[in-house]
Length: 540
Ligand code: DQQ
Image (tube, rainbow, N blue to C red; front, side, top):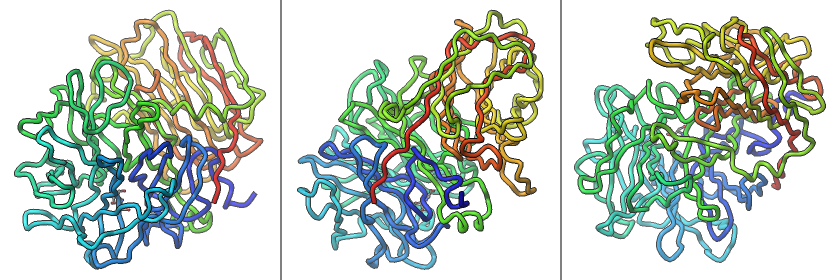
C-alpha cells in the first residue's frame, strides 16, 4: 500500500487529508455532537488555520461539513485559532475563538453564532460586527493571549471565562473576564490562577467534577460535594497537565489542593502524545467528555507532505475524579464498543519469567484489547533507586525498559509487533519497592517501534506512575491499537499513555500481539479479551 494510507488510522477521527490540530468547541446541540478542530485546508503542515466542522450522533462515525469559521474579517484575517462553545440560556450556542489580526500574531477574542438555529447541523456561522469582544490591555502580552474557555455563570448572574497567557518570569496564567450579557467583558483584577516558571498556557480548561459518582457536571454547576479541575497545555513541554482543587467563588479564584503540583512535574491527562485537549459536558449521557489531539511523531515535515495528512484526534474519553480525590480517571466512551467485531480470549494463563504468549485469531493492527494480570506476592518487586526520585517517569522507563529483567514486572503487551520482534511497542507495568510503599510505573515505549532508523526519529519511552496500593494484587490494561497509534489505559484509566509509532514490518496482516512477562515473579493473565475493530464511518 501507498505511504499515504500506511499509517492512517481506521477508527480514530481524522479527515481525508491535510493537517489537523486542537479539538476545539465541542458540544452536543439538540442531540447532535459537533466537533470543531484546527485544520489547514491547504496542506499537511500547520498553517492557514480554520475551524473545521464535523457532526455525529455517537462521536465515532462522522459527517464532515464545510469549515465553520475561517479568516475573513479585520479581527481574524491572519488566523482563526482555538476557542470553545457555550450554550446560552434559550438553547443558543455561541463560539468564542481567538482571532489573529496582523503579521505579528496579535491576538483578540471573538465570537460567532449559528446563522440558522433550525439547521440541525448548524452549518453556517456568523461573525457579528461588534467583534472583537476582547483586546489585550497594556498589562497583557498580546501575542500570548489565546484560547478562550467555555464560559460559566456565577451566582451573581455574570458570565466568566478565562484566556491563557504568559507574564514575565515565565509565569503562565489564566486571565479572567466577566460579563453580564456575553458581549461586554471586563477583566477581573486577579487571574483565576497563575504559576511561575510554567511558560505560556494554551487551551486552558476549567470545570467541576462530582465527588459522589462518575457523572459529569455542567460547567456552570453550583453545589456541594464537587471539586474543580484546571487543565493547561504547556507550550514548552507540549504536554497537558492538570490540578484538582477548590474554586473559591467569593474571591473568584482557583486554589489547587495541597498535594497538587502546578507545572512540569504535575499530573498529566496523558503521559504520551496528547495535547491541546478540551472537555465538554454531554447532557445526552450525563458525562464529561475529553478530546485531545495526537500529533504525528515522524518528525519530518517531508513525511507529512508525502502522506498528505498529519494528526489525529484521540478516542473521546469519559472523565471523572477518582474516589481518592487525588487524580482523574478516563475511559474510552462506551460508543466505541459498537465497532468491536471478532473476539478472542485467554483465561488463567500463567506467564513465567521471560515468557511471551501470542494473541492469535485477530488482526492486531486494528484492535481493542483488555487484559487483567494478577500475581500472588509483591515480595519480588525491585528496589526503586533513590536517585530516580527527581526524574520524570519517562526517564525511568528509558533506563528500565521492557527488555531489562525485573522482579514483579515488566509485564504487559507487545503491541504492533513484527513476527520475530524486530520491532514492537511494549505497553507494560513494573512494580518498584520504595522505603515505605510500592510504586507502579506504566510505560508505552516507542524506542523499538520501528526498524526504520534515523538519528532524528522521535521514539520516546513515554511513562507515568499509577496511583494504586495494589491491595488486590491485580493490574489491568486496555490498549486501543490503530495502525500508527497505541492508546493505553492503566488500572481502569488512572494513568493514560498515547504513542504514535511507524512500524516498517508490523503492518496490516503482518502485525502481531503478545502478552509478556520479563520479571522473576510469575504473573497470571486472569482475563484477556481482544476484538478486531471495524472502521468508523466518515462521510464527506
Ligand atoms: N494551537 C492553536 C492555538 C493554541 C495552539 C493554533 C495549541 O490557539 O494555543 O492552531 O496547540
